[in-house]
Length: 514
Image (cartoon, rainbow, N blue to C red; front, side, top):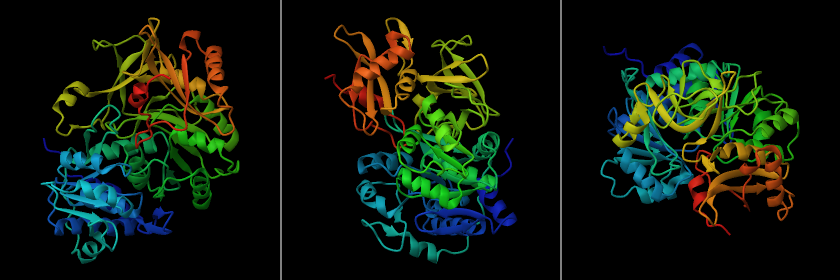
Protein backbone atom coordinates (compact mmCIF):
# COMPACT_ATOMS: atom_id res chain seq x y z
CA UNK A 1 0.00 0.00 0.00
CA UNK A 2 1.41 3.40 -0.97
CA UNK A 3 1.98 5.77 1.92
CA UNK A 4 0.36 9.21 1.98
CA UNK A 5 2.45 12.08 0.67
CA UNK A 6 4.28 13.83 3.49
CA UNK A 7 7.25 15.82 2.26
CA UNK A 8 9.38 16.84 5.26
CA UNK A 9 9.23 20.46 4.12
CA UNK A 10 5.55 20.56 5.05
CA UNK A 11 6.18 19.38 8.59
CA UNK A 12 9.43 21.16 9.32
CA UNK A 13 9.11 24.44 7.41
CA UNK A 14 5.67 25.31 6.09
CA UNK A 15 3.42 24.24 8.97
CA UNK A 16 5.50 26.20 11.45
CA UNK A 17 5.59 29.20 9.11
CA UNK A 18 1.79 29.16 8.89
CA UNK A 19 1.14 28.81 12.61
CA UNK A 20 4.07 30.86 13.99
CA UNK A 21 5.27 33.11 11.15
CA UNK A 22 7.00 35.65 13.39
CA UNK A 23 8.80 33.12 15.59
CA UNK A 24 12.58 33.49 15.52
CA UNK A 25 13.95 30.46 13.67
CA UNK A 26 17.60 31.11 12.81
CA UNK A 27 20.34 33.47 13.93
CA UNK A 28 23.50 33.84 11.84
CA UNK A 29 25.90 34.76 14.64
CA UNK A 30 28.61 36.01 12.27
CA UNK A 31 26.48 38.11 9.89
CA UNK A 32 24.00 39.14 12.56
CA UNK A 33 21.07 37.97 10.42
CA UNK A 34 17.88 36.90 12.21
CA UNK A 35 15.26 34.92 10.29
CA UNK A 36 11.68 34.17 11.27
CA UNK A 37 9.84 30.96 10.36
CA UNK A 38 8.13 32.84 7.53
CA UNK A 39 11.46 34.06 6.16
CA UNK A 40 12.97 30.57 6.26
CA UNK A 41 9.98 29.32 4.26
CA UNK A 42 10.35 32.14 1.69
CA UNK A 43 14.06 31.41 1.26
CA UNK A 44 13.43 27.67 0.87
CA UNK A 45 10.73 28.32 -1.72
CA UNK A 46 13.01 30.62 -3.66
CA UNK A 47 15.78 27.99 -3.65
CA UNK A 48 13.28 25.37 -4.83
CA UNK A 49 12.21 27.62 -7.69
CA UNK A 50 15.83 28.36 -8.65
CA UNK A 51 16.71 24.67 -8.77
CA UNK A 52 13.64 23.98 -10.89
CA UNK A 53 14.50 26.86 -13.24
CA UNK A 54 18.02 25.55 -13.89
CA UNK A 55 16.60 22.17 -14.84
CA UNK A 56 16.84 20.03 -11.71
CA UNK A 57 14.35 17.16 -11.58
CA UNK A 58 12.90 15.25 -8.63
CA UNK A 59 15.24 12.64 -7.15
CA UNK A 60 18.34 14.25 -8.63
CA UNK A 61 21.00 15.04 -6.08
CA UNK A 62 21.95 18.55 -4.95
CA UNK A 63 25.29 18.49 -3.14
CA UNK A 64 25.82 21.13 -0.45
CA UNK A 65 29.35 22.20 0.47
CA UNK A 66 28.06 25.02 2.61
CA UNK A 67 29.11 26.56 5.91
CA UNK A 68 26.58 26.92 8.71
CA UNK A 69 24.61 29.84 7.29
CA UNK A 70 20.97 30.47 6.35
CA UNK A 71 21.94 29.54 2.78
CA UNK A 72 22.57 25.96 3.88
CA UNK A 73 19.03 25.66 5.23
CA UNK A 74 17.53 27.42 2.20
CA UNK A 75 19.08 24.99 -0.29
CA UNK A 76 18.61 21.97 1.98
CA UNK A 77 14.87 22.57 2.37
CA UNK A 78 14.58 24.00 -1.15
CA UNK A 79 15.94 20.84 -2.76
CA UNK A 80 13.58 18.70 -0.69
CA UNK A 81 10.69 21.04 -1.53
CA UNK A 82 10.94 20.40 -5.27
CA UNK A 83 11.65 16.68 -4.87
CA UNK A 84 15.41 16.72 -5.31
CA UNK A 85 17.66 15.11 -2.71
CA UNK A 86 20.01 17.34 -0.70
CA UNK A 87 23.40 15.79 -0.01
CA UNK A 88 25.32 17.76 2.63
CA UNK A 89 29.04 16.97 2.69
CA UNK A 90 31.94 18.14 4.79
CA UNK A 91 33.45 21.58 4.19
CA UNK A 92 36.79 20.28 5.47
CA UNK A 93 37.87 18.23 2.47
CA UNK A 94 40.16 18.66 -0.54
CA UNK A 95 39.42 18.43 -4.26
CA UNK A 96 40.67 14.81 -4.16
CA UNK A 97 37.94 14.05 -1.64
CA UNK A 98 35.18 15.99 -3.38
CA UNK A 99 35.71 14.42 -6.81
CA UNK A 100 34.63 10.86 -5.85
CA UNK A 101 31.70 12.22 -3.80
CA UNK A 102 30.37 14.18 -6.77
CA UNK A 103 30.92 11.20 -9.05
CA UNK A 104 29.31 8.70 -6.67
CA UNK A 105 26.25 10.85 -5.92
CA UNK A 106 25.83 11.86 -9.59
CA UNK A 107 25.00 15.34 -8.31
CA UNK A 108 23.21 17.56 -10.80
CA UNK A 109 24.05 20.70 -8.82
CA UNK A 110 26.76 21.57 -6.33
CA UNK A 111 26.25 24.61 -4.08
CA UNK A 112 29.37 25.92 -2.36
CA UNK A 113 30.24 28.61 0.17
CA UNK A 114 32.84 31.13 -1.08
CA UNK A 115 35.40 29.99 1.52
CA UNK A 116 35.35 26.46 0.08
CA UNK A 117 35.11 27.21 -3.64
CA UNK A 118 38.85 26.87 -4.27
CA UNK A 119 38.85 23.34 -2.83
CA UNK A 120 35.74 22.23 -4.74
CA UNK A 121 36.42 23.82 -8.15
CA UNK A 122 39.13 21.36 -9.31
CA UNK A 123 36.78 18.45 -8.60
CA UNK A 124 34.07 19.76 -10.95
CA UNK A 125 35.71 18.98 -14.28
CA UNK A 126 34.66 15.90 -16.25
CA UNK A 127 31.57 15.28 -14.12
CA UNK A 128 29.01 13.98 -16.66
CA UNK A 129 25.96 14.39 -14.41
CA UNK A 130 26.77 17.87 -13.11
CA UNK A 131 24.52 20.55 -14.54
CA UNK A 132 25.81 23.61 -12.70
CA UNK A 133 27.99 24.59 -9.75
CA UNK A 134 26.85 27.57 -7.71
CA UNK A 135 28.67 29.68 -5.17
CA UNK A 136 26.63 31.32 -2.42
CA UNK A 137 26.72 35.05 -3.05
CA UNK A 138 26.50 37.71 -5.77
CA UNK A 139 29.92 37.16 -7.38
CA UNK A 140 31.66 34.26 -9.13
CA UNK A 141 34.41 32.58 -7.11
CA UNK A 142 36.94 30.14 -8.57
CA UNK A 143 34.87 30.01 -11.75
CA UNK A 144 31.64 28.98 -10.02
CA UNK A 145 28.39 30.70 -10.97
CA UNK A 146 27.00 33.12 -8.37
CA UNK A 147 23.77 31.91 -6.82
CA UNK A 148 22.34 35.33 -5.93
CA UNK A 149 21.24 36.36 -9.48
CA UNK A 150 19.65 32.97 -10.09
CA UNK A 151 17.74 33.18 -6.81
CA UNK A 152 16.65 36.75 -7.55
CA UNK A 153 15.34 35.77 -11.00
CA UNK A 154 13.54 32.64 -9.79
CA UNK A 155 9.81 32.41 -10.42
CA UNK A 156 7.13 31.40 -7.97
CA UNK A 157 7.93 28.34 -5.85
CA UNK A 158 6.74 25.04 -7.32
CA UNK A 159 4.14 22.98 -5.47
CA UNK A 160 5.74 20.94 -2.72
CA UNK A 161 6.71 17.63 -4.28
CA UNK A 162 4.28 14.91 -3.09
CA UNK A 163 6.90 12.62 -1.60
CA UNK A 164 5.73 9.64 0.42
CA UNK A 165 7.07 8.98 3.88
CA UNK A 166 9.17 6.17 2.42
CA UNK A 167 10.63 8.41 -0.29
CA UNK A 168 14.28 9.36 -0.07
CA UNK A 169 14.60 12.78 1.54
CA UNK A 170 18.37 13.23 1.85
CA UNK A 171 21.67 11.44 1.70
CA UNK A 172 24.43 11.66 4.27
CA UNK A 173 27.91 10.38 3.53
CA UNK A 174 29.66 8.51 6.31
CA UNK A 175 32.88 10.02 7.61
CA UNK A 176 35.04 7.37 5.99
CA UNK A 177 37.02 6.26 9.06
CA UNK A 178 37.68 2.86 7.47
CA UNK A 179 37.60 3.58 3.75
CA UNK A 180 35.68 5.42 1.06
CA UNK A 181 32.64 7.28 2.45
CA UNK A 182 29.26 5.67 1.75
CA UNK A 183 26.06 7.53 0.93
CA UNK A 184 23.41 6.60 3.51
CA UNK A 185 19.86 7.18 2.27
CA UNK A 186 17.32 8.64 4.70
CA UNK A 187 13.58 8.93 4.19
CA UNK A 188 11.14 11.74 5.01
CA UNK A 189 9.76 9.56 7.82
CA UNK A 190 13.15 9.46 9.53
CA UNK A 191 13.17 13.19 10.32
CA UNK A 192 9.92 13.05 12.27
CA UNK A 193 10.97 9.95 14.19
CA UNK A 194 14.32 11.46 15.22
CA UNK A 195 12.74 14.74 16.26
CA UNK A 196 10.19 12.99 18.48
CA UNK A 197 12.42 10.25 19.90
CA UNK A 198 15.50 12.30 20.71
CA UNK A 199 14.66 15.98 20.28
CA UNK A 200 11.46 15.97 22.30
CA UNK A 201 11.68 12.57 23.99
CA UNK A 202 15.16 12.87 25.52
CA UNK A 203 16.04 16.57 25.39
CA UNK A 204 12.55 18.02 25.87
CA UNK A 205 13.35 20.48 23.09
CA UNK A 206 10.63 23.04 22.45
CA UNK A 207 9.99 26.61 21.30
CA UNK A 208 11.59 28.00 24.44
CA UNK A 209 15.00 26.60 23.52
CA UNK A 210 17.91 28.28 21.80
CA UNK A 211 20.26 25.74 20.24
CA UNK A 212 23.96 26.06 19.47
CA UNK A 213 25.78 23.14 17.88
CA UNK A 214 29.56 23.11 17.56
CA UNK A 215 28.99 20.12 15.27
CA UNK A 216 28.24 21.50 11.81
CA UNK A 217 25.13 21.09 9.69
CA UNK A 218 26.92 18.95 7.11
CA UNK A 219 27.20 16.09 9.56
CA UNK A 220 24.29 13.97 10.83
CA UNK A 221 24.68 15.11 14.45
CA UNK A 222 24.73 18.82 13.55
CA UNK A 223 21.98 18.54 10.96
CA UNK A 224 19.63 17.18 13.59
CA UNK A 225 20.69 19.72 16.21
CA UNK A 226 20.51 22.96 14.22
CA UNK A 227 18.41 21.74 11.31
CA UNK A 228 15.31 19.58 11.46
CA UNK A 229 15.03 19.06 15.26
CA UNK A 230 15.23 22.78 15.97
CA UNK A 231 12.79 23.52 13.16
CA UNK A 232 10.41 20.72 14.12
CA UNK A 233 10.21 21.70 17.79
CA UNK A 234 10.15 25.47 17.30
CA UNK A 235 13.59 26.04 18.85
CA UNK A 236 15.87 28.81 17.59
CA UNK A 237 19.11 27.68 15.95
CA UNK A 238 22.21 29.86 16.37
CA UNK A 239 24.62 29.24 13.50
CA UNK A 240 28.37 29.93 13.43
CA UNK A 241 30.13 29.41 10.12
CA UNK A 242 33.69 28.95 11.38
CA UNK A 243 35.54 26.88 13.94
CA UNK A 244 34.62 28.55 17.21
CA UNK A 245 37.16 28.93 19.99
CA UNK A 246 36.22 28.46 23.63
CA UNK A 247 35.85 32.23 23.89
CA UNK A 248 33.60 32.31 20.82
CA UNK A 249 31.35 29.64 22.33
CA UNK A 250 31.11 31.47 25.64
CA UNK A 251 30.19 34.70 23.83
CA UNK A 252 27.59 32.95 21.65
CA UNK A 253 25.98 31.22 24.61
CA UNK A 254 25.73 34.32 26.75
CA UNK A 255 24.91 36.68 23.89
CA UNK A 256 22.01 34.61 22.56
CA UNK A 257 20.74 32.94 25.72
CA UNK A 258 21.57 29.45 24.46
CA UNK A 259 19.83 26.69 26.39
CA UNK A 260 21.12 23.58 24.58
CA UNK A 261 24.77 23.11 23.59
CA UNK A 262 25.86 20.26 21.32
CA UNK A 263 29.55 19.38 21.01
CA UNK A 264 32.07 16.54 21.03
CA UNK A 265 34.16 15.45 24.03
CA UNK A 266 37.30 17.17 22.75
CA UNK A 267 35.52 20.53 22.70
CA UNK A 268 34.17 20.07 26.22
CA UNK A 269 37.76 19.31 27.32
CA UNK A 270 38.98 22.49 25.63
CA UNK A 271 36.29 24.54 27.32
CA UNK A 272 37.45 23.15 30.65
CA UNK A 273 41.08 23.99 29.92
CA UNK A 274 40.22 27.56 28.84
CA UNK A 275 40.02 30.63 31.02
CA UNK A 276 36.40 31.50 30.21
CA UNK A 277 34.28 32.61 33.16
CA UNK A 278 32.67 29.93 35.29
CA UNK A 279 29.23 31.51 34.69
CA UNK A 280 29.62 31.42 30.88
CA UNK A 281 26.92 28.76 30.58
CA UNK A 282 24.41 30.20 33.01
CA UNK A 283 21.60 30.04 30.41
CA UNK A 284 22.35 26.43 29.37
CA UNK A 285 20.06 23.73 30.74
CA UNK A 286 21.79 20.78 29.03
CA UNK A 287 24.92 19.92 27.11
CA UNK A 288 24.94 17.02 24.66
CA UNK A 289 27.98 15.00 23.58
CA UNK A 290 28.48 12.55 20.72
CA UNK A 291 31.03 11.24 18.15
CA UNK A 292 33.33 9.73 20.81
CA UNK A 293 32.59 8.48 24.37
CA UNK A 294 32.44 11.26 26.96
CA UNK A 295 34.97 10.53 29.72
CA UNK A 296 33.45 10.48 33.19
CA UNK A 297 36.01 12.96 34.43
CA UNK A 298 35.00 15.55 31.83
CA UNK A 299 31.34 15.07 32.73
CA UNK A 300 32.04 15.60 36.42
CA UNK A 301 34.41 18.55 36.02
CA UNK A 302 32.08 20.34 33.59
CA UNK A 303 29.16 19.93 35.97
CA UNK A 304 31.25 21.14 38.93
CA UNK A 305 32.67 24.18 37.15
CA UNK A 306 29.89 25.33 34.84
CA UNK A 307 26.85 23.76 36.49
CA UNK A 308 25.82 22.04 33.26
CA UNK A 309 24.98 18.35 32.92
CA UNK A 310 26.28 16.79 29.70
CA UNK A 311 24.28 13.94 28.19
CA UNK A 312 26.49 11.39 26.49
CA UNK A 313 25.07 9.32 23.67
CA UNK A 314 25.81 7.50 20.47
CA UNK A 315 24.40 8.03 17.02
CA UNK A 316 25.55 7.14 13.54
CA UNK A 317 25.12 8.54 10.07
CA UNK A 318 23.05 5.45 9.30
CA UNK A 319 20.64 6.09 12.22
CA UNK A 320 20.62 9.87 11.81
CA UNK A 321 20.84 10.91 15.47
CA UNK A 322 21.39 9.49 18.96
CA UNK A 323 19.74 6.11 19.53
CA UNK A 324 21.32 5.44 22.94
CA UNK A 325 21.58 8.35 25.37
CA UNK A 326 21.91 9.34 28.97
CA UNK A 327 18.87 11.05 30.48
CA UNK A 328 18.63 14.41 32.27
CA UNK A 329 19.02 13.95 36.01
CA UNK A 330 19.71 10.21 35.73
CA UNK A 331 23.41 10.04 34.97
CA UNK A 332 24.87 6.55 35.01
CA UNK A 333 28.69 6.72 35.38
CA UNK A 334 30.76 5.10 32.64
CA UNK A 335 27.73 4.26 30.50
CA UNK A 336 26.57 5.55 27.13
CA UNK A 337 22.95 5.47 28.28
CA UNK A 338 19.64 3.81 27.51
CA UNK A 339 17.87 3.26 24.16
CA UNK A 340 15.67 6.19 23.17
CA UNK A 341 11.96 5.58 22.60
CA UNK A 342 11.27 3.50 19.50
CA UNK A 343 14.75 1.93 19.41
CA UNK A 344 15.38 -1.78 19.89
CA UNK A 345 18.88 -2.99 20.81
CA UNK A 346 20.43 -6.44 20.51
CA UNK A 347 24.00 -7.53 21.27
CA UNK A 348 25.23 -10.48 19.27
CA UNK A 349 28.34 -12.65 19.00
CA UNK A 350 30.28 -13.15 15.72
CA UNK A 351 27.90 -15.95 14.74
CA UNK A 352 24.86 -13.72 15.20
CA UNK A 353 23.65 -15.32 18.45
CA UNK A 354 22.45 -13.10 21.30
CA UNK A 355 24.99 -12.66 24.12
CA UNK A 356 24.22 -12.77 27.83
CA UNK A 357 23.88 -9.48 29.76
CA UNK A 358 27.29 -8.38 31.00
CA UNK A 359 29.10 -9.92 28.02
CA UNK A 360 30.50 -7.81 25.15
CA UNK A 361 28.59 -8.07 21.91
CA UNK A 362 28.24 -6.48 18.50
CA UNK A 363 25.57 -3.78 18.50
CA UNK A 364 22.49 -4.34 16.32
CA UNK A 365 19.88 -1.56 16.22
CA UNK A 366 16.30 -1.52 14.92
CA UNK A 367 14.53 1.85 14.60
CA UNK A 368 12.33 3.81 12.21
CA UNK A 369 15.34 5.89 11.18
CA UNK A 370 17.65 3.06 10.10
CA UNK A 371 19.02 3.97 6.68
CA UNK A 372 17.16 2.62 3.68
CA UNK A 373 20.58 1.52 2.43
CA UNK A 374 23.88 2.75 1.07
CA UNK A 375 23.79 4.15 -2.44
CA UNK A 376 25.52 1.89 -4.94
CA UNK A 377 27.04 -0.34 -2.23
CA UNK A 378 25.31 -3.72 -2.38
CA UNK A 379 28.22 -5.42 -0.62
CA UNK A 380 27.95 -3.16 2.42
CA UNK A 381 24.15 -3.35 2.47
CA UNK A 382 24.32 -7.14 2.70
CA UNK A 383 26.74 -7.08 5.62
CA UNK A 384 25.25 -4.14 7.57
CA UNK A 385 21.47 -4.49 7.10
CA UNK A 386 19.69 -7.52 8.53
CA UNK A 387 15.93 -7.21 8.21
CA UNK A 388 14.86 -4.51 10.67
CA UNK A 389 18.34 -4.34 12.20
CA UNK A 390 21.47 -2.38 11.34
CA UNK A 391 24.79 -3.78 12.53
CA UNK A 392 26.70 -0.67 13.60
CA UNK A 393 30.20 -2.13 13.92
CA UNK A 394 30.38 -1.12 17.60
CA UNK A 395 30.93 -3.35 20.62
CA UNK A 396 28.79 -2.73 23.71
CA UNK A 397 27.94 -4.38 26.99
CA UNK A 398 24.45 -4.44 28.54
CA UNK A 399 24.52 -3.38 32.21
CA UNK A 400 22.30 -4.62 35.04
CA UNK A 401 20.29 -1.37 35.18
CA UNK A 402 19.38 -1.63 31.49
CA UNK A 403 21.96 0.88 30.30
CA UNK A 404 24.63 0.15 27.70
CA UNK A 405 28.35 0.90 27.75
CA UNK A 406 30.44 1.47 24.65
CA UNK A 407 33.62 -0.61 24.46
CA UNK A 408 34.90 0.42 21.04
CA UNK A 409 34.56 -0.37 17.39
CA UNK A 410 34.52 -4.07 16.58
CA UNK A 411 37.92 -3.75 14.90
CA UNK A 412 39.34 -1.54 17.69
CA UNK A 413 38.97 -4.09 20.51
CA UNK A 414 42.30 -5.45 21.68
CA UNK A 415 43.07 -8.94 22.92
CA UNK A 416 45.93 -8.60 25.39
CA UNK A 417 47.23 -11.81 26.92
CA UNK A 418 44.05 -13.54 25.76
CA UNK A 419 41.77 -11.02 27.48
CA UNK A 420 39.69 -8.38 25.69
CA UNK A 421 40.63 -4.77 26.40
CA UNK A 422 38.43 -1.80 25.49
CA UNK A 423 40.42 1.19 24.16
CA UNK A 424 37.55 3.45 25.28
CA UNK A 425 38.00 2.29 28.89
CA UNK A 426 41.75 3.02 28.85
CA UNK A 427 41.20 6.40 27.20
CA UNK A 428 38.63 7.38 29.83
CA UNK A 429 41.15 6.53 32.55
CA UNK A 430 43.92 8.57 30.93
CA UNK A 431 41.88 11.74 30.41
CA UNK A 432 41.03 11.81 34.12
CA UNK A 433 44.55 13.15 34.60
CA UNK A 434 44.70 16.94 34.93
CA UNK A 435 47.81 17.04 32.73
CA UNK A 436 45.97 15.38 29.80
CA UNK A 437 43.72 17.16 27.33
CA UNK A 438 42.84 14.20 25.11
CA UNK A 439 43.95 10.65 24.37
CA UNK A 440 43.49 7.80 21.91
CA UNK A 441 44.46 4.15 22.40
CA UNK A 442 45.15 1.62 19.66
CA UNK A 443 46.87 -1.74 19.45
CA UNK A 444 50.53 -2.17 18.52
CA UNK A 445 52.71 -5.23 18.20
CA UNK A 446 55.68 -5.68 20.53
CA UNK A 447 58.96 -7.36 19.59
CA UNK A 448 57.33 -10.78 19.83
CA UNK A 449 54.39 -9.76 17.65
CA UNK A 450 51.98 -9.63 20.58
CA UNK A 451 49.34 -6.88 20.60
CA UNK A 452 49.53 -4.39 23.46
CA UNK A 453 47.87 -0.99 24.09
CA UNK A 454 49.58 2.12 22.74
CA UNK A 455 48.41 5.57 23.84
CA UNK A 456 48.63 8.87 21.98
CA UNK A 457 48.25 11.73 24.44
CA UNK A 458 47.71 15.46 23.97
CA UNK A 459 49.07 17.21 27.07
CA UNK A 460 47.20 20.00 28.81
CA UNK A 461 48.73 23.44 28.84
CA UNK A 462 51.66 23.56 31.24
CA UNK A 463 52.03 19.79 31.58
CA UNK A 464 55.50 18.30 32.02
CA UNK A 465 55.78 16.53 28.67
CA UNK A 466 58.88 14.51 29.52
CA UNK A 467 57.38 13.05 32.66
CA UNK A 468 53.92 12.46 31.23
CA UNK A 469 54.41 8.99 29.62
CA UNK A 470 55.47 7.37 32.89
CA UNK A 471 52.73 9.21 34.77
CA UNK A 472 50.11 7.95 32.29
CA UNK A 473 51.29 4.36 32.66
CA UNK A 474 51.28 4.58 36.44
CA UNK A 475 47.84 6.14 36.52
CA UNK A 476 46.29 3.47 34.30
CA UNK A 477 47.84 0.73 36.43
CA UNK A 478 46.31 2.36 39.51
CA UNK A 479 42.74 2.51 38.20
CA UNK A 480 42.49 -0.48 35.83
CA UNK A 481 43.76 -4.03 35.72
CA UNK A 482 47.55 -3.79 35.19
CA UNK A 483 47.55 -5.66 31.87
CA UNK A 484 45.50 -2.80 30.35
CA UNK A 485 48.18 -0.13 30.76
CA UNK A 486 49.69 1.31 27.55
CA UNK A 487 53.17 -0.10 26.87
CA UNK A 488 53.95 2.94 24.75
CA UNK A 489 52.83 6.53 25.33
CA UNK A 490 53.33 9.00 22.48
CA UNK A 491 53.03 12.68 23.37
CA UNK A 492 51.46 14.52 20.42
CA UNK A 493 50.10 17.98 19.68
CA UNK A 494 47.00 16.73 17.88
CA UNK A 495 45.14 13.58 16.90
CA UNK A 496 44.09 12.81 13.32
CA UNK A 497 40.34 13.45 13.22
CA UNK A 498 37.55 12.99 10.73
CA UNK A 499 35.37 15.98 9.87
CA UNK A 500 32.79 14.63 12.31
CA UNK A 501 35.11 14.60 15.32
CA UNK A 502 36.10 10.93 15.37
CA UNK A 503 39.71 9.81 15.78
CA UNK A 504 41.23 8.20 12.69
CA UNK A 505 42.55 5.21 14.57
CA UNK A 506 43.80 3.51 11.41
CA UNK A 507 46.23 6.43 10.98
CA UNK A 508 47.52 5.96 14.52
CA UNK A 509 47.85 2.19 14.06
CA UNK A 510 50.03 2.81 11.00
CA UNK A 511 52.53 5.00 12.85
CA UNK A 512 55.82 3.18 13.53
CA UNK A 513 57.04 2.73 17.07
CA UNK A 514 59.91 5.00 18.05
